[in-house]
Image (cartoon, rainbow, N blue to C red; front, side, top):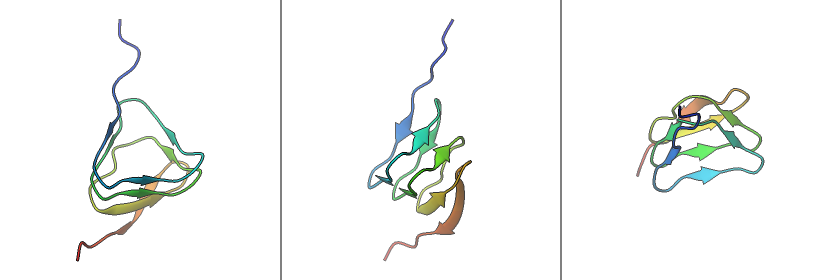
Length: 63
């Protein structure tokens, strides 16, 4: 029986202080996670996400 699943973190990711990432979550490339967030679901590429539970609040355009 397996209780834990791997967490995948992409390239160029910034994770603020005191963030909790649950098992099995994938965080895409070019993502910023705000301080104190609880990441319960996958976060897509090029986004800013914050909160408890963590939600995408803004898309980050690459220039």
